[in-house]
Length: 165
Image (cartoon, rainbow, N blue to C red):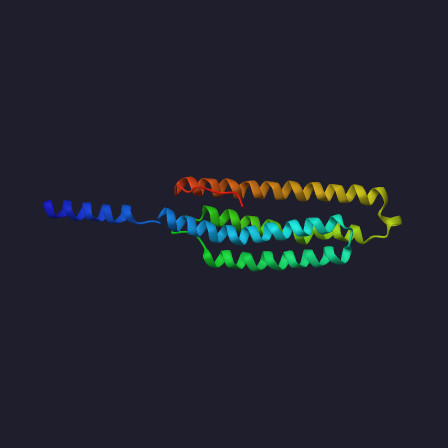
């Protein structure tokens, strides 16, 4: 009986010591955040391109952003979950998918409106553009807040301190 108790205690200590350390969790978060922030920065470049009304530049930035989003999405898929904890990974995955949807839909429609000649664009074009912009911003904000929430919960779980970039 004494041997069984000792074996049980050893097993409990072994299993309780398993799992990622705060350092491993921080490194994991840093990897995901790197790919995430690269896409955020590229989206900011894309947003700026709309302010210049240069349709060639806008189209180039949409394609560059789609390419980077797809590339970084594949990278986070390779990273996967951290020792069975997929909360941050899933949130980042959803974020990348939503970005790609926005690039393929709202951003592309906004670009197509900008390509119209001024006489065809008019007030109706302006209204459509603003409506698309509002929807894009709403969807982006929603998924970004979900990502930040997941990141905060992850940090709390692993006793991490998050810093703004």
